[in-house]
Length: 473
Image (cartoon, rainbow, N blue to C red; front, side):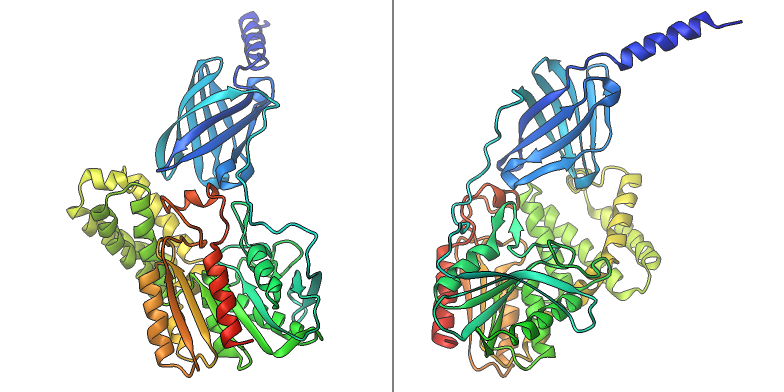
């Protein structure tokens, strides 16, 4: 016999799924992370079962972030944002307001309001980004390594006057970067190349492996592999008539400074090195020190951040010392059990260790991440050892407000190493008021990078130019 009730129920359920949803549209709110960051959700699809979403963070120049599942339960909405390890949950207050919580590590309140579909989202200005036409030569270049396993593409700029020119290769920081080292729509390397080329130098900036037109193994690559790419670029430049083959130097930002120091140990033809927020101690110490500084900027009290740093150093050391992640994880859990005996529930909550299950899951994910080839190499690296082998002039610059590569710690490491080296001359400078990107900052948090109009402090650009003029040119 036909189930009339089942049939009616299924019809009702189908009608419910196909109903119009008030969530469809564009919604904007401000997330307070010490500074206010705009968050924009774009919900498309006219029915509950077809709703999908993307996310913009305009102040961080992050656009079109794909969201995962969007679940509607009456007036409640849940959005998975796996691409950034986050989520959003909210309740529809009225047709134009959703009161919710944004979670990405920590949970923060986020109220979003419906905006007109054609309303433009204002993009932060980047007034220093060079715009054509240029008063120098700008050429697209491509070349391979000797084994033909890596293909590199970049931009070579050089003056229109007669060469050959003193030349700098720009080396980007951690993570895959394009040739301009674009971070939150700031094009650091385009700004540096423009300034130096206008002052008479040739500059090569290159897409990292897997970015732009460059190809090559990425997932198992480390800083040592990226150093090989820099040496490939040096060999390419020596084929160009515009380049002074005896005056090719390296300018490395962040991890790029470490990579430059590795090249120094492999080649004897580096004319100069400039490190911009470059490392000067062990990679493990870099991670630990930046972790503490970032936690404090995120609102965690200094004592809690310092205490966590002590445990975090242990964790990193386990991953450096142990051959497999299983053993490292077991030791991490033992250390965590001992460590949290002296930690209050409030402090644990500040650090995201809310339940035992969540704590174990977070620690396991962290240990696994630390065993990736790049991090495994980075944590064991020590740029200061490399700089003891320097044989060319070196300029080291760090911003006083850098919370990623702390100025005092790393500049001291570089200085002590260079004092032991055969470098004919070196200069060490801590630039007041500048962050990791060499911007004049106010709050000096990571999130502020995208809100600042300035891309690279003019005094840092001029310091590099003057040093090259006096030391190299």
